[in-house]
Image 1 (cartoon, helix red, strand yellow):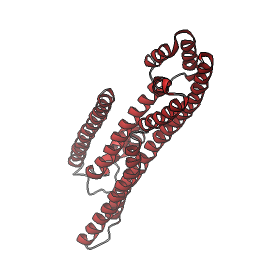
Image 2 (cartoon, rainbow, N blue to C red):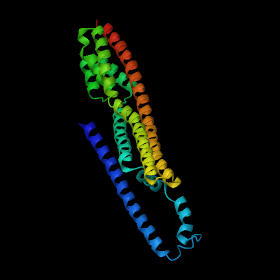
Image 3 (cartoon, rainbow, N blue to C red):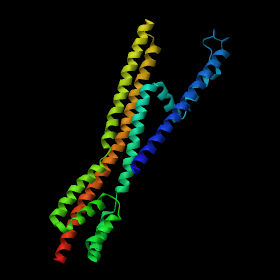
Image 4 (tube, rainbow, N blue to C red):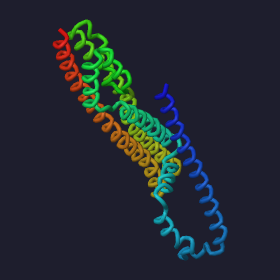
Length: 278
């Protein structure tokens, strides 16, 4: 339940952020169109002098160069088209939400295995199996859960304990890897959505050329630019999610190695404890 709440919260945060960005972008676009209309009205009388450079046109280049990065990103998102760019941004939002949930879960699952082994051994020597089980019960993480399952079956013999540790270790590994398939899905899906937007954008550009009956360079360039924006966005989303995916995989590998080493050490401790009591 806690993981579900965390996931829903993260998704809500990213959706709210995306909605705010989209709203701000639409507002900026409307203001820009209004400014263009005012400029055209103001310089209608000077239209015959095509070589004149207005004050606004002269300042256009510095304003563009000084535009903040987030403003440029918002403009590109609008230029790429709301349909496919919306799907690409949705893949990024959901992928990041799952990635953050996995990172939080894995951080909580990380424990100091050496310290836990010392505590379990001390509890065994002072209070027996029940004391060691209590230590594992009060410690979070998959390693403590594996220890508890092994200690709980101590009366059945060391062989049963070893099989229990191995079996429950596989269960814990599955819990650690939960959600990775969805991240991999969005990594593969984002570029596909971008390529689809590119293909449809190119088709729209050729339809415009056919309707105009002439190859207008500005018409072709505009269509190609819009089409390529979706591809670039899809590739950027895939690269971002790939970084998080590789980090999570590395974290899981580290936890699995700790689980395996700690399980072997637990079996050795139980063997020594069994010798002392027999």
